[in-house]
Length: 182
Ligand code: ZN
Image (cartoon, rainbow, N blue to C red; front, side, top):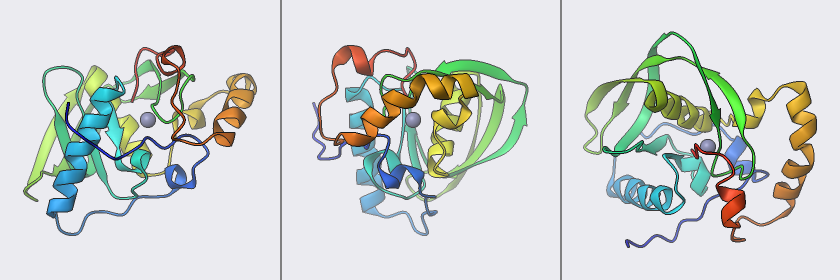
């Protein structure tokens, strides 16, 4: 197992609500950060992770729905098509599942680890993951998509999360209560 000193930030921490700045020049520290984010994502049983979730407001995301690890810097959605609704969880909002409407197919432009401009097309689950992580870069969380009734239902849970420190180890059942962790 590779090492990382990063920790997942939990709902209530201001860093999750800030807009992340684009990376001006891709440096070694970004490559190292992406590597560590991937370690943390796999460790947490997640399929996506954004830099604000580890306390860094820069536009970096990682994703892996099985088979390929994506590392995207300054990702921007340039095309959207269709609609899908999946029940999403979030490593930063453990114990909460929200149905989120997303585009079914998207095209994302980004920089790779060498700072080169790239483009990727994604659909279904991968498109969902990219949209979820890009939301993180804008300070947007799955709870923002909750209906009025859902908001009432999860209010206590969110208050509880806000009160506790992010370094507290989550129980397995709590972290895994939603199938998709992003
Ligand atoms: Zn998330």
